Length: 453
Ligand code: GDP
Image (cartoon, rainbow, N blue to C red):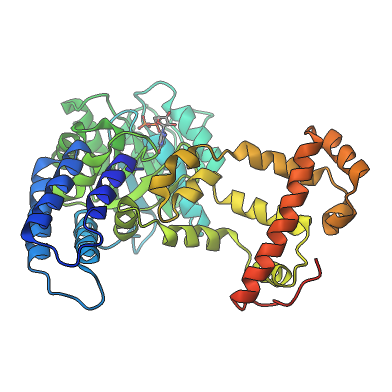
C-alpha cells in the first residue's frame, strides 16, 4: 500500500536526520524531494502544490522545540499535513434515525462495488446490523449472481430481480427488471422484513457515460440514500480524479471508498480525491477477501505512508480476535515458562484469524523498508507448523520434552514433513519459550517467575 511513495518520503525525511539546525536551503531541498515523490505517485498537481506550500511555510516558521529535533519537527509537520489531505478526522457511517439506513454504491465497472457490498454487509453484521443487499447492477452479466455469492459469504440476505433467485419469499413482484424498480422494491422488502441497512449495488461502465450517470441518479432519487459511496479503484492512476469529479457532478456522493490499495500501483491519485472533491474517504479495501477491508483513518494512513507503522490498526485487529481471558492465561503461562505447544497452536490460530500474516507484519513500524522480506513471509510455512503440531499427541503438545527421536519420526511421517522440520520446530519452541519467559520477567508481566527449563 503506497509503498514506493512511502519509501521516497521516508528517504527524503531521513536526509534531515542528525542536523542540529535546518537552513532554509535544507527545507527547500527536502520539499523538492517530497514534491517529486508525490508527483511520481500520481498525486494531483494542485494538491501537491498546496501541500508543499504549507510544509515550507510551517517548517521555515517552526519554533525551536525542546522536545523535537529539527528533523522530527519536519516529520511532524509532514505527518499533520498528510492527515489533513486525507481528510483529518475519521468519517463514520451516518445511520438513519428511522431505519432502514440506505447505502448506495456507485462507481465504474470493475472498481470493486459488488465485492465491497459483501464487505460492507459483513462489517455491518459484525456490529449487530441486519443488512439487505439489493442487486441493481443489471448491466454486467453475472453481477447479480456475484452479489448473491458475496452475500452468502457475508451471511447477508440478497434481494435480486430474477424470480426464484431472491433470498426469502418476497411477495413483492418485480414486473420489469428495471434497476430503479428493483431498488424501490428492495427498500419495500427491507421495510417489510425489518432489515436495518439496505446496500444498493448499482451498475458501472468501463468509462463515464451519460446513461450510466442518469441511471445512478434515477436510483438515487428512488431510494433517497443516507450515504452514497463512490467506489474508486486506487490503481486507475491519474483518471481517478476526473472520474471522481464526474460522479460528484453526475450523481453526487457522501463518501469515497478506495479499493485495491493492496496493488503495487502508485495510488497517489486516490490520495488527491478528498482534496479535489471535498468528500471524505470512508473505507479502504485491500484485497479480494471479505475481511480485507477497514474504516479509513486518515491519521493511521498518514503514519503508515510515513513508515511509522500502523500499530493502532494492528491493536484493533488483535482486540477483535483475541479473547481477553485466554490471552491473560497465556501470558501467565509464558511468564512461568509453562507454555505448551497446544497454547502455541491456539495463539497461532487466533493470529491467523486476523488475516494473512504478511498484511499484519506490514502494519508494523519500519515495515516499508522490510517489504522484500515480508513478501517472503508465506502462510504456507505456518500451515506446515500447524500440521506438525496437529500430528502430535495431546501429551506431546502439553509436554514437548517427551518428544524423542522415535516420536519425531512418527510426527514427521504423520504430517508429511521431514524429521529435520520437526526438530527445528521443537528446538525453536524451547528457545522461544525461554526467551519469552525472560522477557516477560523483565517487563514484569503476570505470572513471571523463574522457569525450570
Ligand atoms: P464491480 O464491477 O464494481 O462490481 O467490481 P467487482 O466487485 O466485481 O470487482 C472487480 C474485480 O476486482 C474483482 O475481480 C474483485 O475480486 C477485485 N477486487 C475488488 N476489490 C479489490 C481489492 O481491494 N483488492 C484487489 N486486489 N482486488 C479487488
